[in-house]
Every structure is written in structure tokens, then in C-alpha cells.
Length: 162
Image (cartoon, rainbow, N blue to C red; front, side, top):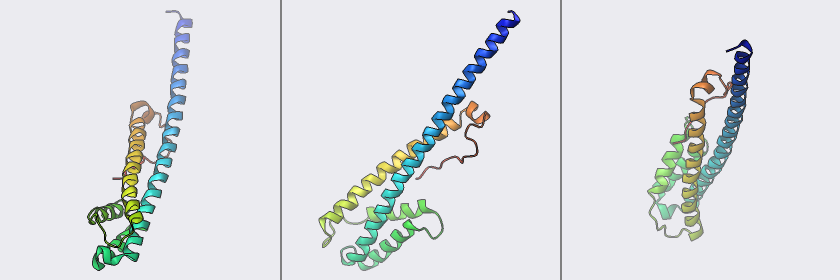
């Protein structure tokens, strides 16, 4: 090969690397935005669920039992503002407590029961969408070239919400 052919080959390779880098940076930015939007949706559903649980515990303690209502109210408050900073754990405790409630709650309006069931479904979907976005972002950032070129900059690796 002549020196001109080598130069042309190197220029084409560099151009392809630059194009790939630009495409990957754009993809990483889109994934970061997707993670942020998914977190906003998940947070809204978690806040709604905690609000409904607080309402149930505050307004209908006889329907769930006085002791359980106190626990439910405390778990809901902790899910909104975790004392130990571990929101994931607080949300899991609240979700477990809500799942253990009997399906028929005497004296509780059907609209509140429906909201609780619907919110539980929406929390599950929002959690799945968020974790899918995190998985896609982590997969792209863990590939060899993006990691080697440090295309993520100083952004922290997003965490799953289990």
C-alpha cells in the first residue's frame, strides 16, 4: 500500500470512530433522559401510594385494625421521608404491608380501594420501566469502548430500584 492509501484508510477509520462516538454519546444522553423521566414517574407513583396508605390509616383505622393502622401510617410516612435514608427499603416495607391487607376492607369507600389497587399496579409498571431504563444505560456504559473513552463523563452509574 502506498502512503496515500494508508493515510486515506486512517482518515476513514478516524471518521468512523468519530461518527460512532457521536452516535454513542447521543444514545447515552437519551438513555440518561429516559432514566430521569422514568424516575420522575416512579417517584410520583410511590408518593401517591404513600399518600393513599396514610389516608387509609388515618381515616379508616377500624377497617384495618388500630395496631395495623398505626404501623401502616408509620410505614407510609417513612416511605415519603425515610429516617435512615434507605427509601428502597421503606417502600418495600410499605408495599408488603399493603399487600397483606385483606381485599375487603369494611367501611372503606370503594374509590379508595380501587385507587390502592390501581396505584399498586402503576407502581409495578413504573418500577419496571425505570429498571429497564437503568439496565439499558448500564449495558451501554459497560461496553469496552464507551468505558475506555469515558463517554459517560463524571455521571454516576444509575442504580436499580428493587
